[in-house]
Amino acid sequence: MIKIGITITEAKYANYPAWIKSAGAAYEIVELDWEKNNAADLMLCHGLLLSGGVDIDTQFHAAETKEYPLQPAAFNSTRDQFEIGLLNAALQAKIPVLGICRGLQLINISLGGKLVLDIESIGKPNHRAMNGVDHVHQVELDPQSQLAAITGCSLGTINSAHHQAVLEPAPSLKAVAFSLEDGIVESLEWKDPAQHGPMVCVQWHPERMANKENEPLSQNILEWFLAAAKKYQHEHH
Image 1: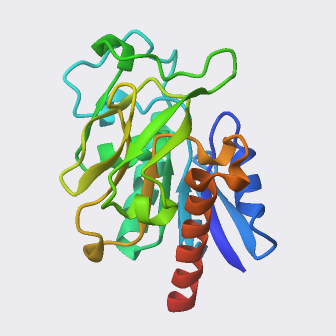
Image 2: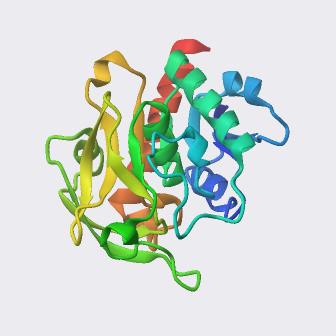
């Protein structure tokens, strides 16, 4: 059985395990839960999915300002610390990592990158979900990127539900996909993948895209992640 660790999120969590299980019965979900503080269970896993959720507490940012208009009523610094620890352990063990939305942002911050705390405050269009419906827009991929190789895409349509974004990629990362309407970074990957374990980070939500089974910016990412997990299992267990 291939085990995929998924971090517990406050909302829409069910989409993540359902997406993994759509690939068949060979996959078992391990819930990595900050309330249970079960980080040790990561070592049972063959892949780590860092899920979406509330903004990361600004104490973990290299941001100059610590307050912003769309700041949540409460951060969850316990979850943030728990997931930063999971990420560091996964990277050290070279467990395959998939970062989605907040997951991408957590990876970037953890590795020394910076975020835009409010996209609209820098004059960019809103990428937030409105009335429960994701924002939909086009994305352009770097044709030389790992992501372009995985998806076979240079252009595509994605769903957004975020108001923060990458300002500066971490030193070890590069931006490889950009919103066509405003240049917002939509994906990060390793500059030198040979030095690291497998990782894909996307700002959109592949686990809840419309028609995701036929959408390479969802399905191909899922297939890549599960293939990487299977390879990890074969090599380490």
